[in-house]
Length: 320
Image (cartoon, rainbow, N blue to C red):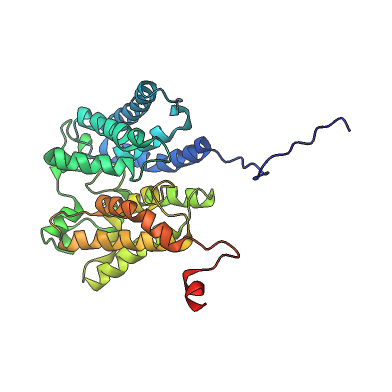
């Protein structure tokens, strides 16, 4: 009788899952792509990764201090944003531009809207879009894989999607195996499909993400690629579609929570990506597609939100 009866509101079962644990799993899943980028593009890739991560963490620390809010750098979300931003940049980018991107992602896109869980678009992708429009030449300067083995200066070349846009034939493009292992030009974290798939499998196994969005996104893109008469495997292995579908379209804050909503969201991402790739002036559309669908998430949520038990739906009310 000496024990006190604690009366409290639900929920009564506390989950051991925390933001820090989730972000740590995402970081672990991103490691293979980071290692692949260093092997493919040399130690400069590590420099860019370090710059963006440091910029994001420092920006979060300073902005939280200025806004007089509780520090959140310990939840590792800024580290994840820095990694994803770096993976969306070419290895030839000026480190100052990369650092500027980190400030945009954290201060403008994330903290000005309240911090983690409050931003309505993906910070890393939004920063990439701003950098693409502000520094178009440096953001499209692709280095040839393993250039550092023969020269200290980056040897530039066209990306597979850029070559496709220019009308290159299959024989002029990297082989499917080369693209699968990352032996092709592109952003740091998007070239090695194998590393990204390994990371995705890890996240699904850890139940950090659901496979619904990646599978529906890639499936929609593959279907439209076939309908448009494009090279399906080339569309799936090139550009940032693997990176985007696995690591950015699945962001908790900017994606739907219902299964039906996830399917609609992912299909929308796939449709917009392929429309831009096939008809747009840009060779790639992953960043724009995910950000556009991020903006539509509230509408998707309201349309797919399940009705509470015992509550009448609009159809039920119409029948009465």
